[in-house]
Every structure is written in structure tokens, then in C-alpha cells.
Amino acid sequence: MPEEARMKVIVSYSIYQPMIIDAFNALRGRESTPEEKERLIQYFICSGAFDDFIDRNELSPEALDTISFTPRISIPFV
Image 1 (spheres, rainbow, N blue to C red):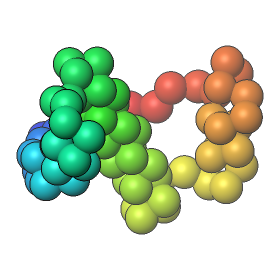
Image 2: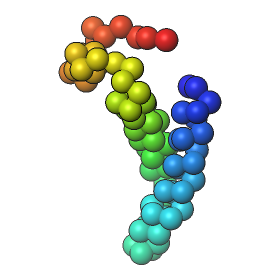
Image 3: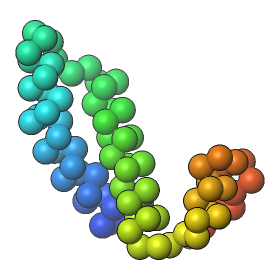
């Protein structure tokens, strides 16, 4: 994972987890589980990758369609 993308995940997670997720869980009298925390990290990884594809125009609409709807035939890129 590129350093810039890694930092996006770290910053997003470290803001969102304590301020939103933990706060809402506290209202229900519970703490976040390790599985929930891992899912949130995975979400931010996917979200950051999607932002890069769209914001930087690194992939054509056709390539995005292929990755989204037929991932088995998409070719990884570097």
C-alpha cells in the first residue's frame, strides 16, 4: 500500500473510531469488538482505494465496471 494511502487509512480510522463508533457504542453500553474495528479498517482501505481510482482518474469507466462487476477477469495493475 502506498504511504499516502496508508496515512489516509490511519488518519480516518483514528478520527472515526473514537469519535463516532465508540461514542455510539457507549450509548448502547458496550465497547467495539476487535472484529468491528478490523471491519472499519478494511472499509477505510477500500474507501481510500476507491477515492484514488475516481479522484485521480487512474482507471477508465470500463475498467471500473470490470473491477466492480466481473473482478475475476480484471487484471491487477501496479
